[in-house]
Image 1 (spheres, rainbow, N blue to C red):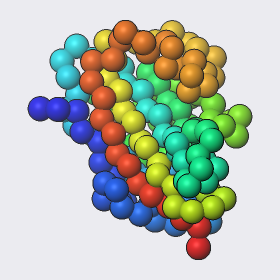
Image 2 (image 1 turned 90 degrees about the vertical axis):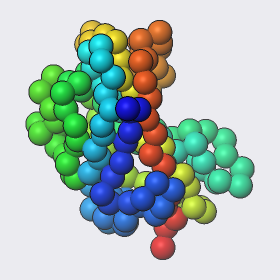
Image 3 (image 1 turned 120 degrees about the vertical axis):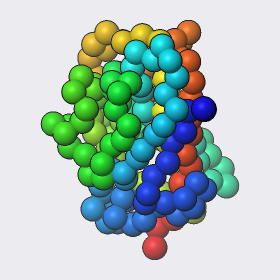
Image 4 (image 1 turned 90 degrees about the horizontal axis):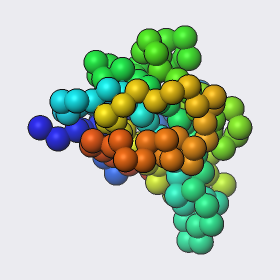
Length: 157
């Protein structure tokens, strides 16, 4: 069974509800996964937007959320999950607002795609002291057993 990632809040490729964006409550969406492969020691989650600042002329990928060392026994994250409510042992990295935690979609122009990427790793990573996406990707290199992806879209009203 392959690793899969889904959200009860939006369908793959569909619109992300406003409550999970800067125009709503800026709450993290609920996420659920299954098919974690044997030998997985931890999971990592990265949420980013490759369409920044303008989907017609993207210049960068904006990072919205970085989590790692999620226990392989975890199967979901509830909506609006606070740091204290993350699965035991989960560590946070920094997003492109230079803070930990979730930062919702807030595109300046056009409809952007938001990639929710879950990685199954064959190791428990050391404390990386609030890593950026790039630092986490470097630490994960050579340790990814499987990856799942969920894409949602959003355009400001």
